[in-house]
Length: 213
Ligand code: TMP
Image (cartoon, rainbow, N blue to C red; front, side, top):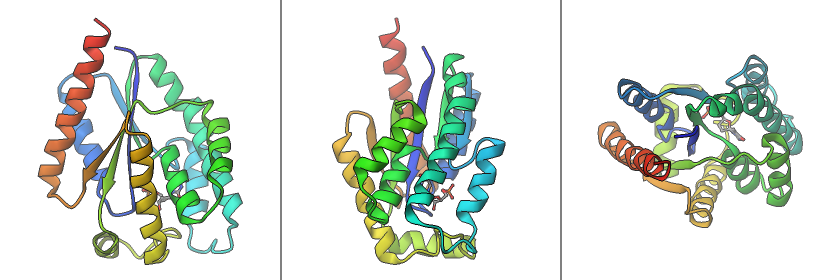
């Protein structure tokens, strides 16, 4: 099987990072050649850009500049890490990718999705995920979870209506791109959700292995 890019998406507090690391351990035990990474970040440059983006002191960051910073970190990650890993045949588990920009900067901030599509394409060279799991959760529940774990980075300080638009944006993207997107019910228990994630990913990998026979 050639390399595959599997992306975990969702609003803050949906539990995608926990699910990703549980899946990583599971796939590792099964002997797959894999790696995990995250956006924004995953490279030394990207991690620095991440700290600018999440710093609550940068409340004056302009919406377009924000979109370009996410795109810059993404471009660094794609060309330095993801494309080489895919060429080596790895399964890459990525915490967020282009849909985050569409959902947060597009549906959330109201930036033109056409403009965002262009900068995403320029940043990634058109690279697309093979499978995207969208972790969906009511905004009220995500607020409860985020408040428990942190004092709130720049994005986490956004309003309920912002996250409502982001959530609806994700669901819309998943509907429009149902060929590679699947919505997961993130209100389930961690264990039940992980069971479902494993089933989806096992089926995806088995299908790809059969295709390459
Ligand atoms: P994380 O904490 O889930 O890693 O994500 C960092 C924050 O950045 C999160 O609030 C979502 C936001 N984000 C965007 O607004 N646009 C993007 O393109 C990405 C990748 C993340």
